[in-house]
Image (cartoon, rainbow, N blue to C red; front, top):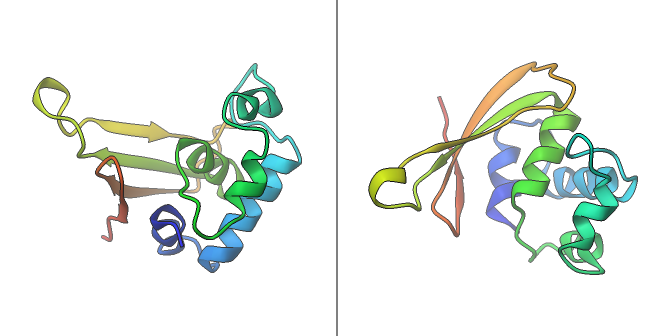
Length: 120
């Protein structure tokens, strides 16, 4: 299971597998992840079977899945970036729902290869 989906599971009252599948369904239905760009076009820059690969429990999630989660569950996700050194060290990456309706804010750590929930 991907650490991203496990991290989201700490804040969303659904199992990691259900979260993954809802996000994949959202992408499959071509729902928006960015203003002004068709989701299918964004995914075409990845690989031809992006959604099918993402449905596999061993596939890691990333920014696309975080943005889709924001849109589905009306939440802001602040990713604490612990992968950079020097000037950019510990910069936050903020994801918000496209429609702007934020019902809750969550935070997760990212080391460049692993996500972990920040529990308050």
